[in-house]
Structures are given as structure tokens and as C-alpha cells.
Image (cartoon, rainbow, N blue to C red):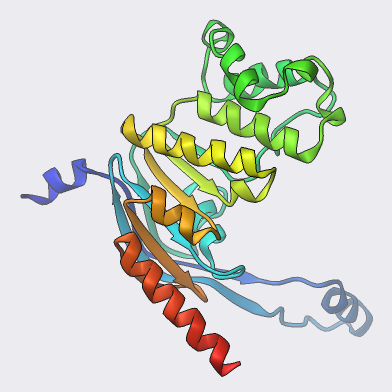
Length: 253
């Protein structure tokens, strides 16, 4: 199979991607002002020379501890951050579930925010009107849909944000730890949706702490640790490697 034919089967390509941050602190800035000297800021390499590809219709799980680099990687794929080096290619209409509810106007009602968010993704009002009932039902906020968002709990905003994004029917779905917000029922709903969109041919990248869940829903898992891609493979193989690694790390602490 030629390279062109292979490329047509890929939804996502991550090629030698790295991300370096310069951290700024008030203490450093204050010392610089007082001394008149430019002080060097500490540098963090959050993602280090990571490469992998994802086929169209595949579900790839991202596993890693807090600070491992998986959230930074997803944000680069979503276009929120720019890589320091390397290249990311995504083929298809993309929706990112990164900070659920972050784009809401708190002065507007839930219903008004549905229309505002969906139109921002290119949907016409008539298209949105046909999706409102399903969005409200999925979010479970029918009683307060016409109340201002500022009266919602964080869990309610998260459920509404997820439900709006799910209704957009993207070709590529990027999700970062979205099940960490909300209750167990919401987490069950999220993973059920990922299973459904996989069957519809949507490509999914799902970052989660929940290794057991990823084993159940993902076709493959990528394991990120300290910015490096340690392993990409079948869920059972990666899960076994991660658990062995974490067990050895605990013994050495």
C-alpha cells in the first residue's frame, strides 16, 4: 500500500511533537523588578518527541499520571497550544471536550447557550432546534434549561457542555478527563457515548485516569509518562505494562 493510500486511512498524525514551557512566578517577577535584573524562568518540557498515528474510526486512550503530559498533548491536538517542535495533522471536523462549559456565557440561559455554542461550530439555527430536546434530555437539566447558567452547579454545566459537544457529531472527538467532573452516572453516560460514536465511525482520543474504563472502550492505549510516549498498543498489553511500572515505582519510593 502506498503512502497516499495509507494517509487516507489516518485521522490523526502526531510527528515528533514536543512542548516546552517557561514558567512564570510572582516571586521571580518581583525579584526582577527590585534588582533590575532579568531573571531566567524555569523551563518545563511537558511533551518530549512524541509520535503516533490514529486510524479513522479508532478509539485511542491516553493514560498517564497527573503532570505526565497527556493533557498538554490533547490541547495541542485541539489547537489550544502550539507545539514547540514537531507536527500534528488532523483530518476531519473536530470537537474538543477539554474544559466543559468553559465557553458558556453565565448571564444567558442554558437554552440560549446551546444555540450560541452550536452556532459557533457552524450549525444553523434550524439544525440546532432539531437537537435541543436531545441535548436537554442527555444533560438532565430540563427543569432549569431556561435559568441563567450562573445558577448551575459545576456538574450541571459539565453535563450541558458534554451534551452540546456530543450533538455536533464530529468526525474527530478529543476528550480530556471529562469524567472527572460530575457524578458516577455522568461518567457512565460519557463512556456509553464514546462507545456509540465509535460504532458510527468517529475517531476518538480519550485521556483518562481510569485505566479500567479505557481498557473497555479503547481499541489501543498510549501510555505517557514524564512527557515521553512509553508504549502504544492493545489495551491489555499497555495496562499490564503500566501496572507493573507503577508497582515497581511504589516499591522504590
